[in-house]
Length: 217
Image (cartoon, rainbow, N blue to C red):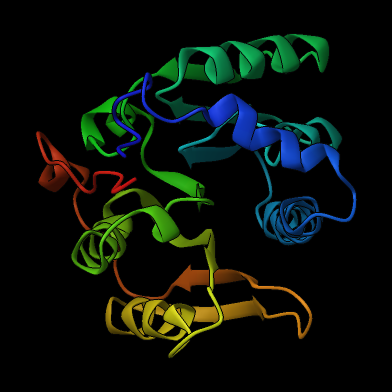
């Protein structure tokens, strides 16, 4: 099943697990929000955020609502129902600097005009795409970031074989990132990573017209 066909996967139904406080998704959400809040605190002045496959924005929007400074965020979500929920949540939180775009986050052009950002989130992305697409996406992230910009990402582990998050961490390292934080609970299969760009950012124009990834299911 492909995420770029919104009629195939019931992504709204998938998000219902967030409402169960004991679920892996709900626990992961708490960790993502904590890491995002710490990352936001590193950037004085107006902060810019890009969220790929943003869902209904429940990871990013409540954290931005507590951020004391000016913030602008671009959320890319293909599913129109989830995108509309994100817009409604942004209005309820009085987040006037949020732009929710109903579009394919695998296409860089969906959000390229919002770059460079201080923070990019790729939560719920790497576990749904191929290893090659994940490597391509990580290699492209320096073109979306300011110098010293931060990526907050997630990955699940099915419990069999090597932990795929370790390969992602190595890929970030090869592409000029430094690991800031990594959460791997002993009693859960989710992982949350935070990486900071130490290398020089790439020109944004290098991503023009490029597809970074496609959902595999």
